[in-house]
Length: 126
Image (cartoon, rainbow, N blue to C red; front, side, top):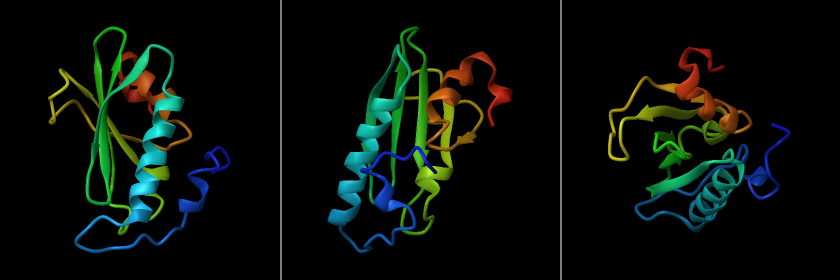
């Protein structure tokens, strides 16, 4: 977990607030997580859409060939550190294809490398 940016490191092993309204702690985390994803995207990839939710989030990444990739993290209250260790990624046939291709999981450290592999060698993601 050495490559976590300074802004996200405090959220490792963090116990998020819970309730009917999304807590300020999660809203801060979500903003930092989104900005980190944007920073680590490979050249020719952009964050096409970001979907903030109640203690979890997802998004769509687009490459320069108009191919789309979906990513998602689990509820941070019940799955601590999965936002770092287990990010769902999969191909999409278009930017509203919520069923998509096969599910793969990556961690934040390998996120950039593994989204590039989805279209080139999908069975080689580790």
